[in-house]
Length: 214
Length: 214
DNA sequence: CCATTCGGTGAACGTCTGTGCACTCAACTA
DNA sequence: TAGTTGAGTGCACAGACGTTCACCGAATGG
Image (cartoon, rainbow over all chains, first blue to last red; front, side, top):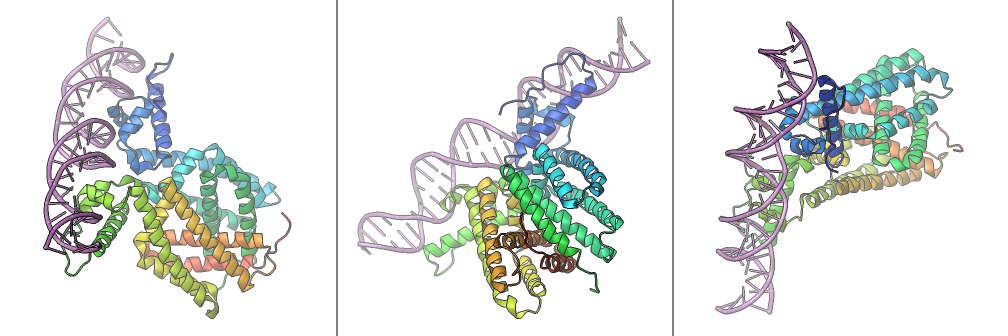
């Protein structure tokens, strides 16, 4: 609960190293503090205290809490995108796209719970610029999924517009699933099993659907 | 931006009436202030100032901002449930469940934007008790939809467990759609058109799906 | 080795926060 | 009509807030 203690000098540490270490401590502290409420409700002074540094030192790293938030969004999605590359690289070798992908996503949520919790909260309740950044990142992922679906030929009878809508449907669903995994980690197995069935309903169904005029 | 002005006496107004009027003003002020951030980020004093009342007067109506939040959840879902009764009462007379229901939901979101915005934010970022209250309300609605689907016989080959999952899938989707309508009211027509197609993909597909063993 | 850079310090400011307390005075009740 | 109730007041407090500024001292680089 107290200070993280970033103050002690470490041997053989360059000045840039140390700055990076403090920066990390600030990011982690903000992530931890926001977990009990949200970014807009925490204070620069709380973050500084948690890090074990004087309030004004904060400004050496971030101009404001909002900019810190944008850095956290960046960090979260950098990791998320690496995971998705993995999912998409491995997807073809699975008989079932669903059984292959969902557990990987769940694993990533488990390993990065605080980041996902941050995204889930700030996506709807964060400062406007943070919300916008998150929305944009999710949109990029949706587009990638759409081109991937098109390339896979799994939806040959879909118009490209409808492939986009299908991708959006899937991404929205996975976002909802991730929110639930974050909110109640103890029910991961059940949440995952249910999501598996639901995604099957959605896909088995959707793939029998045909694009038609508006 | 300034005070709402609840101070002036009104003729022929009972004491209870006046208390209720102030209570309403507090609820509205909190709703308006939270719109620019969220419940956990606003202060009792801001609310009081907005209402045009002294800070301590707040306590005559709510023990804390969190309890005020629970009252707003209650109010939001009371209205929402009335709307759903309407949807479900009228649903059978529409050739297409989707075309009948979605516009009614969209209309309700438009007419109660601040309440929906509040729910969308606090659902993931609110105080724990508020989050829990919202989660519970949504779960109740999901259950009602499930019994309604079962009663309609539209999913005869579904197990009751899977009907529950289908209902959850639909509710989650509509929640996502409502979030988007709130976030970007100007794109209502497009959002609605896309949601229509997506729900069709989901349902046309899902209804061709069959329950099987786990 | 000397000058510079810069992450972190500590005091100070004006403002805002939640909440306690004693109060008023119009609406209510008996 | 006399007495009670209770929504709203006004003041006061101690603490937290963001931000400013001059300052330090170790790592850095010429």
